[in-house]
Length: 353
Image (cartoon, rainbow, N blue to C red; front, top):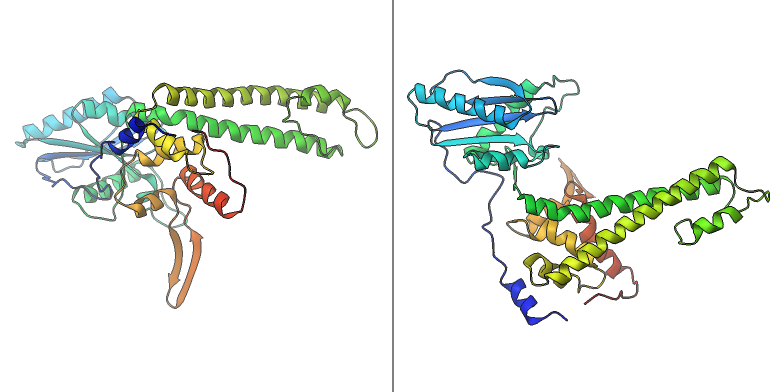
């Protein structure tokens, strides 16, 4: 059972201010605001902007380095000051991608208001053949960003920029999910190699499987071919390493919860783990991916997980295509799996205290 201190800590968790990320709640004074949009790529960045007092809309291609970006922002601010404008706010936006959120955190420390645009919330041209350049992408980001700053809905949606600690807390769960997928692929590959030779029923994931590999015989009563035997041996060695890494991640998580059980995130994990069919791994994923985020209501959670409906309505046609499945697939699996377990008639699973 949970201790009274753990229950009290879970009830006294700080309630963050909920923000509507589909539009800006701050009034836009365009004469005093320096607006920037940057298209990020691996080799170079393209920065576009609107400078108060300057008629042209500058566009600058620069190296993929944060200091170079900051120098251009400062230079454009000086141009606005020379034009007689007072700059009280500098806002910048870029599209979420492989660079993550480090640039947003780096610029915010230096006084720049940074927003990260959700990639799937930006409407693009639906023509089959259309020009696709960084210049066009930057102009598109600038249009949707200005509309968002004006408080208009439907232009784009922003992503909450997490701290580096919040990002790091998600890594064990995501690494474990990747390792579990790799483990499944290796096991299926070994079973397929054996089935090709007519050997069925052998479980290569068992602990004693490597010792039994030499004794396997095909239906023709022959040993495994040497290349196939060597391939399966290497796969088994790789599988053993992956299983050890999965155990290490799981043990580290349990040690962390036992070491600081009253920490807010750990208290929530322990509360969720009491639900039948929901283990520590799923509980930790839901806490890190969902419960620590700011959502306006339950429908926002459903949209984030892709659990909303996907209607197909046109004229007299009314059809439901099922779940949208457009959100976080990891969260969607974590929410639907316990429901499947409870409705499938399976026996109850022991839940750790």
